[in-house]
Length: 182
Image 1 (cartoon, rainbow, N blue to C red):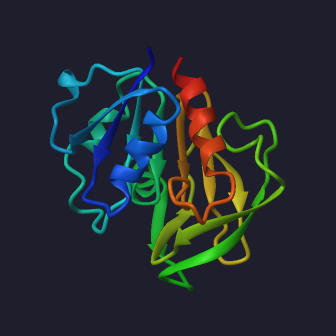
Image 2: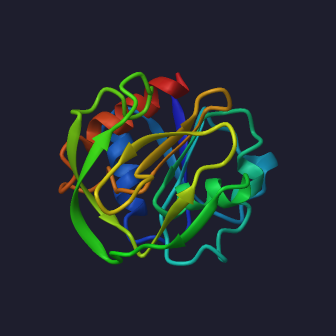
């Protein structure tokens, strides 16, 4: 059975991420973000969202584990900042229903989604420049980087929340990530 751990960055939707994966038949545990990287024994990791980029514990060390890593909202921002990208304040802020344009239909995480996918997203902070090696795979009218991927390193991120019911194809995002971890 595929094992994916969810790293808790004190986000309000962490348990929904665990539930979404569990409903797909994944063995999943929530771990504190201060769990040492050497103790991670999973086929993949989800870096959850959360309120504060300065309180993400050992998340940087998880990017070097040679397993697929999927960052959601703050989790994507951690990936970006730790690998040389940039994060800034969003012009919109807060949570909103947003239409994401999938810009790379070959992307293994979001490429199978409808070309214009409705999602629930927070844009208080957002990735403003992707790190070297990453491609922007989704955008919206209010955010240029709604999704990004570095397929060579198996690192993926979305600004939106696939774990909430407001995101139309959220289950497909988790199915795609599970497939990357198998």
